[in-house]
Length: 363
Image (cartoon, rainbow, N blue to C red):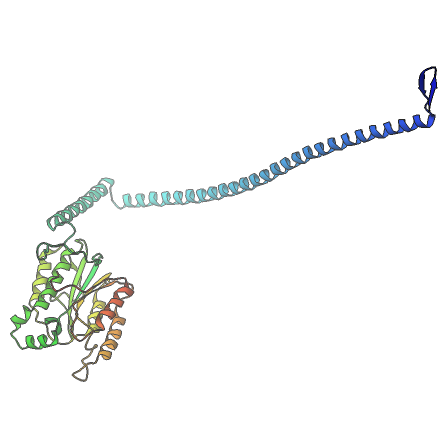
């Protein structure tokens, strides 16, 4: 309450006013302290949570490390067991070798004699390698013999000429004389020497010469001719593999083929059946022909064979082929046999071989 006294204004406060002011001050101080405590608690809680998270990460890393250590220990234990097993086997081998050496010495074998025998065997092998290398150089690298096409041309055919045992099946039926039926009939009425000089047959012989010239020197081969029957091109070699490195024998095969006069029908079944006489089985087959077969293992009853019958004969024949062996076909198409190219192409694809229908000037 304000009062005036002698030009001055004075104020008087009641006890209640003083108490109200004091309580407000206390409340204000309490609020300030409470807010400070709350801020400090939040900061402290955040710090504690961060430390807890770090500790949890350390624990997780520790557990992973413990797993890795256990795995490593397991691997080490396994390696120790394997090493102990190998050590035991080696000890047993040493004991066996010592016993073997003692037995050989008791039988009169001497170390010097054994060494000399090994030296002789090594020398024989070195001589054989030397002969093979000389034969390889004499025969133009990988080729067993030389063959130059017209104009000294090189041919990119895609044929797979590899393998250790290579079989060449050569069609010697009458249709190999010419590409057209009328010309085949005309040539059949001529002298044998004229037939052997026919263009189509000459291309077939050149094809065989080209193939044999590309065979690997360290491989073996056999040439089988077939019409209604199948026989080896070189007499008295049935069921045998011939060495490609034997160049004189290769020349004999070529000369023997050039003495053949194409005649008769075509039996693929007999040709494929002849492969079974070879041991081991061929790992690469080349088939030189001009069309689908005209008979099976036996001659047909009639004098004519329809296109459908030829396809049936072909389907029966390919069942005689050895499995998992590539068949490479060189086809000289014959007039009046439109299904041959498709059938032989499918055979090459199914066996992993190649299909080639060359031009008239190849090779």
